[in-house]
Length: 455
Image (spheres, rainbow, N blue to C red):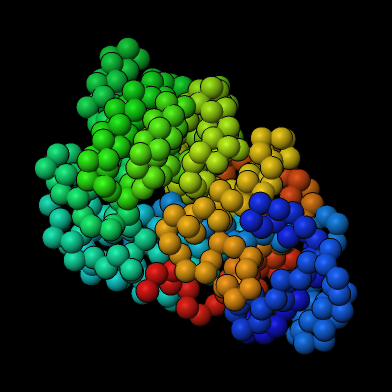
């Protein structure tokens, strides 16, 4: 039961400020936000406490944040549930402070029809611990299905302009033009030029031999040129058609600059970056090898710095994970056979808080990039902010050092490249629609109703 909960005397990080205060939750909503600096604060808190079923004490080492909205995850259901499923990965999400997710369509079978999408919604309604939505996937021949989609029910249409896990590459220019001309749809794109990647891979195979390609060659194979060529093509089509274009997992400094420039004339273009591009760079392939192989590739130290700076300056519109679990045995194969992707949804918020602690950006910017801006970008109703009358999707973090280990990894795949990493902040409590799905770092049995993000 959601009941009435008072979170009192805590630092509230919201809308560009950090201030002392208390928040009352009732009937799944944020009922009252009380400022610790205003007159009559103590009386307000006493009155709220008298009405509360439960009181959570904040304290000087705690912060209250809006729940994270992750606009790009691969929860692997249907078709690859040995790696992850909606139940397991949404549990990992709420343990990490992510209260809403948007899942990608490259499943088996892929979510490229409205009927297949409804099947995913049914599973999520039964199993998800977080709020959920799903992308409808584009192919070279399902334009009519895309036209029939309800823009008020799906988060967007996903277009793979470069191949990744699955087989959903859209390489017909005629089809791309039709997709980009769909009215009032958000088109989310994976941008890598396939011809460039194939050419680079052929050169690597000739140079090293099939079984000996080093993982350090990945950013040369899935190269910055492949990303830039494809992203520039997407931006050009978006400008011509007036498309709501969202460029996913931007991995190069060049793309940041290109998209920032394009937004001056067409603000409907947006960019997402992923937390692992701010955590790793190409020097890390020697240590982590297949564990950080992902598409697009982790690139240079300069790209890492540029992406981090863009987050600090607000020149991107979302920070997400591209959470993509694979079995450890699969990942530990040679370069050609190790699949791309890494699991991060349980750790993305604490990674960002750690980067903030290192001076990369203020904590207010973490909240803006992971909660406020995604809510605005996807036009999500009454989520992503701590405001009276809005859904109570909230996270409490406390300064409580802890170390990632197999014993506390919640991903079904059971591993993380972050094993052995100590974080300064821990997610202790997560509320989804006012329901306390995580209590003192442990999952509860509570499951909020009405978790569908768009309906």
